[in-house]
Image 1 (cartoon, rainbow, N blue to C red):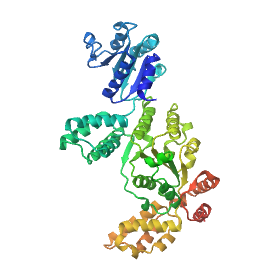
Image 2 (image 1 turned 90 degrees about the vertical axis):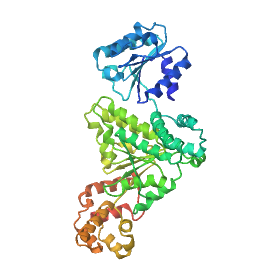
Image 3 (image 1 turned 135 degrees about the vertical axis):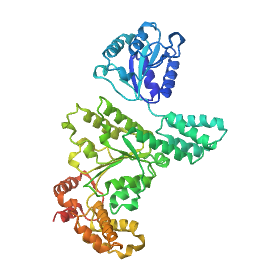
Image 4 (image 1 turned 180 degrees about the horizontal axis):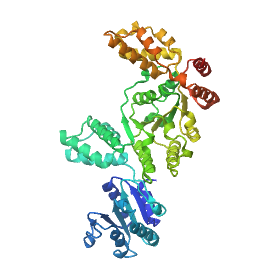
Length: 505
């Protein structure tokens, strides 16, 4: 149900107190005015702390700097049978006041039989416990593609420019996920710069989008330059990804394919899980958003749930995109035992419900090191398309990993390194440990004013204790877990039992 239908239904059903979290006051008030006009029996009154009530000359300035008086206006100044929508800007700041809270609860009871509705507009949800039962929270989504298209066409009206359909589509796609005010600002700047809109202006929009995402302090717009070819080994996983490369296009929709939902990558640290997330975004030409689960949790009542909804809304507005959740096991570990009044459980419930029910093309790539810390609900079918186990690389995969790193660092001298010997001498090394070994070898060579050689890499490797030696219990548990059919192997080379057993011997 879209906002107009939901809000109109609440008005007709005489919901007295409505709370709408949004920073887009102007756009929201226009939407409310549209709904009020369709109903035909609602006048719109707008109040804020500095100016009081506005628009109506008979009450201009009434309730200025007095939130309690702003509420008394609803019953004392407007006749009982007169319809009205009373928009109270930033009113969340006064809800902790006992007199304001009590008056709102009185109004909630008295307005049920009157065509009057109070709408609290705030940038975030801050509702005290005594008002949770009387306030109805309604989400106001970011602009849809048709709204953005209409706004762009309005802005270029003064330039007499005829945009090609291709450029218009590109600008609309780039602007998804921004507020209408931000879209106006960046496009107005583009028009002021060269008098028209150009294809390169899409990059200006993307920069504004990065700024918007940074300001949320929840998501990061992550640059993805890594390629599938930068991943050594993991052939099963790469084949799976390559088959789905075109699944976000219109041809796939016409074929009847649903949008891919996502992946859960499980394995010990340093085996290439995060690298895979970055490579997927680059290969599929989709923006990469990184979510730090820890940032979802705030100290104020209702703040964590609000941040979760904001994250979901922003990711869907930016779709198609990749949402990368690194080390998800740490964010939701042991939720049943956390003494936070159920906040973690509610956030987790909201998140996994979205994973199961989302229809938008947001491809979620979650990584986990400790599968035992994940709640069982996260592993249930329907949350992700597939769960892959990313294990320690085989000898053939270690050769591929050495080759990837050395080809990047010494492309002119690659043939001078004995890659087969390097792979043989590093049997328990993860991809991250192989990279660190090469870096240490470079320090050895640099300190002696020469290029690093195979023997330097072997010397560096002899000084590193692989994580596999200190994580044998975790590896054994993963072996049993994968062999029970809980996940697919990301690699083709050798069986899981043979590979893990070789690390344990």
